[in-house]
Image 1 (spheres, rainbow, N blue to C red):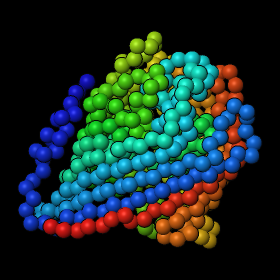
Image 2: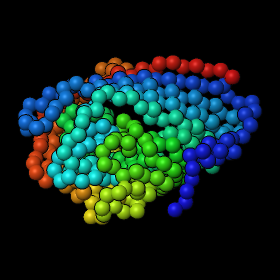
Image 3: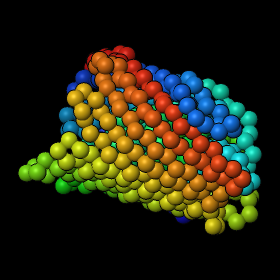
Image 4: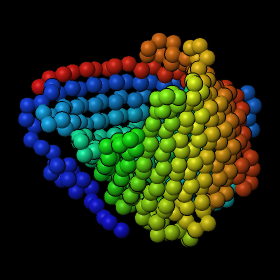
Length: 387
């Protein structure tokens, strides 16, 4: 497989950057967002450990300068801190059931639950970006194109939905269709210009070592090491002017070398995903699917979700259902959510949802039903402009 070392990423970036002649002012923006999740489980099994209060803080910093030739040179540094469910760092976790290693993609294991993880912080993004007529190049710590191009079902919840959750109050969420194989590891990405609504991209990750908040590859669980990751993705976004119909779709494939001493481990892991949504007359419908061989023989992980959303006055309403299955960990899950959200002010958003989730292992079933309240406060932290 083609190999690219981390130091080469920055050499490539410097070699393609032109001299910075007279250009637009240098723009710097910094935003801060805090999310507080309050969970009240009205009915759950005894062995489901509900976390009543979870939180997350994000500081997103962006810098940008446009040259005379139209080339945009920018950079981004994103810092995040959170307290998620202590047994589920970065979605991974030992959930009980059939003992064994964790899946190379899913990160889930059927081994007995391990120690708890407390509040964590992470450098989620630190990259340089060149964006011009020939496309966009990113070099540094970032998610790959398979995750960035994701499309799927709409949800009024931004952090605690049943799919791709950032915060998991029950610790039993197991549905993930956002195709994030390598997490925020150092990588080189290229995305083409959007032509007739279609955009394609590729990412290369020499060493997938990310300890991110949502994709943790150094979790300490028996999880394979991944290297030489390659992602290919395409995204389509179109609006039909006559009818007002808007649709978005995405498809992606990824692979990486697997280093695992476990029996039945493959030399590589392969993952496929697809998703899309359609908006018609204020109604939005969407779905997403992901399948991975998890880096082991006979150990597939599959997940899917469908959902719909609409507006009712100042409320955003959504209805979602999803399922997942991990053959390696011998786990399966189903989840249902109905949610409503409203912007209280320009900076404050409040969302309330009723969720019904179930996780079945080789030895037991765990379920949780109840309400979650998601409070999001976002604001401009700092803006600067100069030459």
